[in-house]
Image (tube, rainbow, N blue to C red):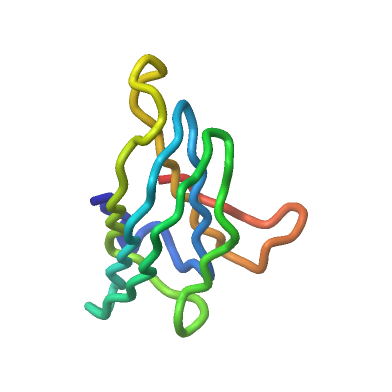
Amino acid sequence: MVEVGAREGTFRSLIIVVEKNDIELFNIAVAYGNGEREAFPTRLVFREGSRSRPLQLAGGRRRIRAIELKYKTVGTWLDGRAHVLVYGVREEASPGASQSRY
């Protein structure tokens, strides 16, 4: 689980980026600042160096309290564990759009 916090501001969407190895992503759960939760169920394999499409958050701009990812590394262990990065997109994705990395 990744704690985000209200001080980080509001976000419209999330982007998942995978580094160092392949993963199988089972679920993404987002806990919002007001206590609501949103799930993005999935069963996708992400190759090293790939990224997700922007995952639009319900209700537009939202404060995020925490993000939980359930995944496993599926590439060769010789390459080590995968690193999964989560970027919070503050505005619609466009050149120069503000992003935060978690």
